[in-house]
Amino acid sequence: MKKILFINFPVSGHVNPQINMCKELAEKDVKLIYYTFDRYFPKFKGLDNIDLRKYPDNFVDYYNALADDPSLHKEFSAIFYVFYTLTEKIMPFILEEVNKEKPDLIICDTLAIWGKIAAQYYNVPMAFFFSSFMGDSILIKNLPSFAFDIFKSMVLYFPFTIKFMRMIKKLEKQYGKIIDKPWNMMADRGKFSIVMTSKEFHPGGNEYPDNVKFIGPAHIEDSELPKVKDTIFVSLGTIATSETFWDDCIEATKDLGYEVVISFGGAKNNKVNIKNLPDNIKIYDNLSLEEYRKVVKRSVLFISHGGFNSISDSILYKTPLLIYPFTAEQKSNGLLIQKCGCGIVYLEKKVEVKKLREKCIEIITNKSLQESLEKYSQSFLNSMGPKKVVEELNKEFNLF
Image (cartoon, rainbow, N blue to C red; front, side):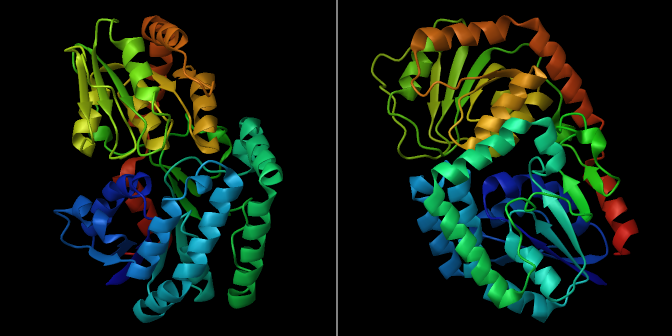
C-alpha cells in the first residue's frame, strides 16, 4: 500500500477546500496522513481511512501569537515574513515525520513551504495544492495589479522585506537552495498541481500546461438554488474592522426589502448597536459551514471581505458580491470579481451609508451581473472535480 502525506497550511480557508480531495483519496487503497491543527479534526468526521496528525503545540502557540498581531495581516511583505518564520519553526518536526514515514508522495499546500522543503530534502515526489489562484507569471500578466501591490508592499514595508529575506538565507544555510522565494511560492513549477477553481475563472487559465488541474470549488454537488432569493448577507470572516462598519451595513440595507443576515465569523472585536434593531435583521456570532452556505444560496447580495472561498461560493450560487477588502490579496480578488462582472469592490476606507446603499441597489438590480455569474458558475460545475483529479494523480504517481 502506497503512503501519501498531505501537508496543510492550517487555516480554515485551506482546510475546507481539501476535505473532498481527502475524502476521495481515503476511499482508495492508500495510506493517507494529513497534517493540520487538531481544532480542524472534526471537519473530517466520517472519514475512516485517514490518519490525522496534529502540528506540535509549540508551533500552534507560535502561530496563534502571529495571528493575534494585526500588523502581520494586511501587507504582502508582512505575510511573506509570516510564511517563512512559520517554516523555520516547524521544519524539525516535518523533517522527522517525513524521514519516519518514508512516503511515496507528498501533497503540499503551496503555502506550507515546509512540506515542499521536506519533499525535496528527502527526494520524495510531490504534488501542489492551490486553495486559491496561483501567483505566477501567467496570473501577473493577466492581473498586473497583483504584481504592483506586491512590489509596493515590499518597498513601503521594507523592514518586513528585510526580515523575510534574512529568514530565507537562514533556511537556505540549514537546508540548501531549495527554499521557495516569494516569486515562485505560488507557481506550479512543472509539478502536478491542483487548483481550486475553474480554468475559465482563473486569470489566464487557458495558458496553463496539462500538469495544472483545475478541480473547481468544493461542494459543487450542493449547487441547487432556492426558487426565491430573499436575503442580504454580510460576513467578513475573522478580520478586524471599524466598530461602526456593521451598523453602517445595517443602516444601508435595512430598508431594501430583504432579510439581512450578519455573521461575525467568530471574531470577538465586532460590535453592533442592538437597540431598536428592525425585525428583518438577524445577527450571528458565527455560522457553521453548512449554515453559511445556505445563507449565501438564498442571498441577492453578499457583502464580503473577498476571501477566495467566499467568492467561490458566491459564484457557484450565483450571488453577486460587494467586496470590502481588508488585505492586499482580498483587494486583488475584489478587482478580479469586478473585472469578471460578478460584483463590485468597495475600496474607500471609510464606509458612507448613502454610497453603500447605492452600491447595494446597483448590484441587486444589475442583470448583466447575473449573466456573468451564470457563466462562471457553469464553468465551476464543468470543472474536473476531486474524483477525476484523484484518477489523474494515480496515473501520474501509480498510487493504487
